[in-house]
Amino acid sequence: MTTYALNSNVLEKTLSVREPIIEVRNLDQRFKTTSGSTVVALDNVNVSIGDTEFLAVLGPSGCGKSTLMQIMAGLVKQTSGQVQLKGKNVKGPNRDIGIVFQRPALFPWRLVVDNVMLSAEVLGMERSQAKVRAQELLELVGLGDSGKLYPYELSGGMQQRVSIARALMHDPEILFMDEPFGALDALTRETMGLELLRIWEMKRKTVVFITHSVTEALFLADRVLVMSARPGRVAEDFKVNLPRPRDLDVMSTPGFSEAAGHLRHLLGATIGE
Amino acid sequence: MEKPLVVTTQKKSTDMKLRRMRPDYFLIPAVFVAFIVVWDLFITFFDIRSVILPRPLAVWQNFISGLNPESPLNYYAHILSTLYEVLSGYVIGAIVGIILALMLSQIPLLERVFKPFIVAFQSIPKIAIAPLIIIWFGFGAGSKIALVILIVFFPVLVNGLSGFKSVEPERLAVMRSLGASQWKIFSKLVLPGSLPFLFAGLEVALVQAMTAAIVAEFLAGRQGLGVLIIQMEQVLNTGGIFGVLTVLAILGWLLTMILNLIRKKLVFWSDAERSRK
Image 1 (cartoon, rainbow over the protein chains, first blue to last red):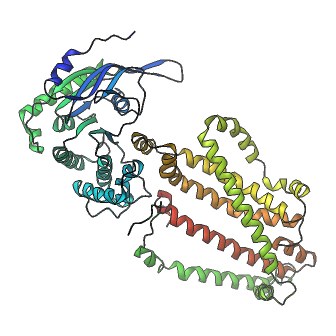
Image 2: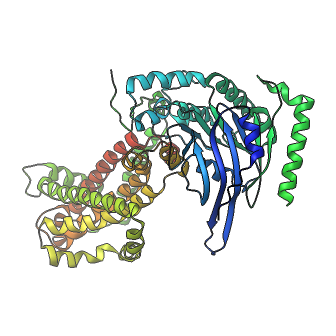
Image 3: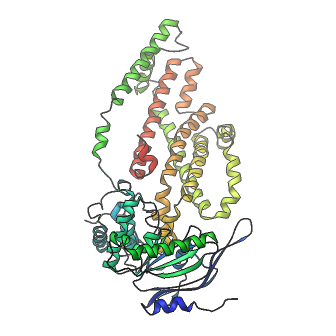
């Protein structure tokens, strides 16, 4: 049944650059709907993500990009295919991973600082050390003096910053972000993008960033994995050749608009399919 | 130095004090006084006999004499009986409701099997079971407590069940992605998240618990505020009945206040709580 035809193109491209930290091979995901028909959410997805790489997964809604992330995070079991994290098969949740969702998903009954410390409690880290680290992380995301507030006292953008700090608390090597700025207004969104790049450059994590915004994907990522919908397939593995560090001005360069045009065309083609 | 890990943290908010200065606190007593005056004028105007409706002053005198421990019709033993029935029935009913809600929320099969029975049972007016309960549990406090348990149990179960099942999927995913144990997921996420639902159930249950105890006392009993009302009814002591109703109002208000205080401490963070004035 399973074919072991590795997508050699993809592998070559990335292996030459960085040592892979995540390897996805021949990944299929199928759902049975209540009416009994089968939906193919992911169809033979192959991707290799390099250590400290910033990968954007770009696609229309329903292309299975969130499903892909949840499988890589060990939250959902795949129908077939292989996902390896640091050379080991992913069988369940993993401490090397931190997750940020579209909604901040903070625990409203906890202070901001206690929200950041959640993973410390779950993983049994020493409390006084965790407190120091939580404060450092709050400062990193620009909320150094908001620790003693409750989440409902913060704006949506600030809440999402807390959620990023929380994801970094247990110092995971990989950060999965599922449309983290999707619920924010355009201005906040740009600021958050800049902030994220700053944090990424400081912390040097591997980031898998799921989005349906072409500009966001290009502005942030080293590589954009463009996905098509129903079934979810990798339409193109696009290398972003824009210099780093980047600021908002990069968006008005010819290279950026050319790449954006290409990706939009590609997305349009995959939707029209 | 180290603060214990608790779900709530006290927060002294200064705007709470400012809020107390609003005109409500003048208008509430004013409305009360107006009500008393209209009541009294109504009796004078229509020349209503005191057996039908006593004057406010008569109610007050009855109330005061009920508070006098020397008086043969004093309230204390009755208050204790009724409070005992309400509180023990309430606590037991709530605990049983929460435990059952917990079990049903954890085991989907159990919920699917029992849900139709719960729905069917819930639609019976529980007060109608009171005579049966008295046959089973006798004339003492037992039958009253049993009825209170029965009445408290359902709103707590139903609300608890929706509370335990209302976990936001992303919050759950955050916990699961950390490999959190079932217990940690429950204690750090499911339980605190269910508190607003639980308190909604507990609030409904409190009023019903008082009603259940009084109705059961009407039917059969030796002591309690409901018994006292029946005794006064038999001698057409309307003023006395109003006096007991005053006691019931105060008790109900006190219990509600206590529950509100606990709720404010525990669920100050919920959207519903913050949209309350």
